[in-house]
Image (cartoon, rainbow, N blue to C red):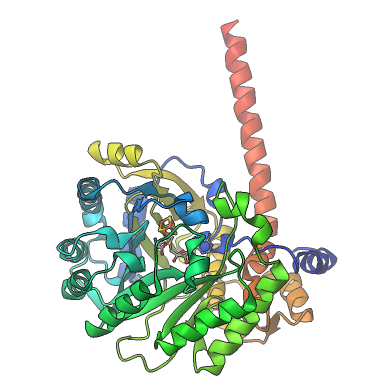
Length: 477
Ligand SMILES: C[S@@+](CC[C@H](N)C(=O)[O-])C[C@H]1O[C@@H](n2cnc3c(N)ncnc32)[C@H](O)[C@@H]1O
Ligand code: SF4
């Protein structure tokens, strides 16, 4: 267990440091995913085993698109996701053909599984022409003859690419929700990302979604260059006045060779200003009747178009997960504590489009690299997922994993509780106050010891490889 003084010193020295939002990737970071592929037959066997025991989770399906329209600066100035420049519909259709073939590689392996929710993201999934959305849902239905009632089937896109025809086709296909990356309602601030988005695009898309009975989520970002608490609040007020029931309010994740990191770093609000924006934004939305469902996620009850969707992964059973990612750069994870050592997996598909296609041409799953979880890793991966919802059910998680998540990480929880960031009861641990804002820091602390062990393991492996290479060279002499 981490030393209590280390934890409190860490917390105190990181309260004013920029949050690096690695939690969205789950545990561990893809840096540690060193297996060249997955043991697909083991996963299929374990899926069947879980089903036979009545423990199989509904599947979460993700389908990605690599393409985005060109912006200046590139990649909207801030985006850290792998994307490719959109060069026309032919390339998009050609890519989609590969996704269909990839889905076929999974079909038998998923036989008997029920779909719990699906997310069509990217990249930019509303680049598809209207006739295409039905094709996507046909693929989904082929893979999953059974879909859970009220399943969240969300298509993600950017406001300026929605049209009335597309929105109608999305609804007609059987999808039931859109998620729109608005980022800034304020046109001047939004233009820093090089997007040609206007307020009109946003209002119009929301109107069409409403006309066709589609639930609509809006993503906005705080911590943007030149943004102030006032401009942030103005955006939220506007969204509330437009009756947006479902708002995701992300903190800007700054990094990589992006324009915002390289050229606008000095224009970014400080971490404490971001904290202020988090507090003001949350208080405003709560005051307007929204409920906070996660660190970044707010919902107003009573949405006539919504079925209480919770974006993406919804923890149904406490530690069991089956998320299947199709397409370029898609991430999948599968596992359960009951499966034992080395039987749970995280993996990512090729982030190089040519390699993605080459794998499918050869009839192989297009996995770029994978991570085989040991039991400690699966505990952390599960905690990370639950932390996004701000609360850990101690009793449920103990029953599922045989681990009391308080006792396992007591110094971390006590350190957070002493700073007013968490509340601990025998039943649950809840992030409170500014706690959700610091979710990335909380996850770093929880994972610290395991990361130390993984780093040592990586060094040992490297040494062993060097020794073997040396011995090989010796043999040759
Ligand atoms: C990967 S984008 C894909 C959707 C669509 N292309 C778009 O830009 O809206 C999904 C969401 O991730 C969020 N996002 C992307 N890059 C981010 C960053 N660097 N920091 C915080 N949020 C980010 C944005 O809010 C965006 O709406
Ligand atoms: S923010 Fe969205 S539109 Fe912009 S590059 Fe990233 S995925 Fe593409």
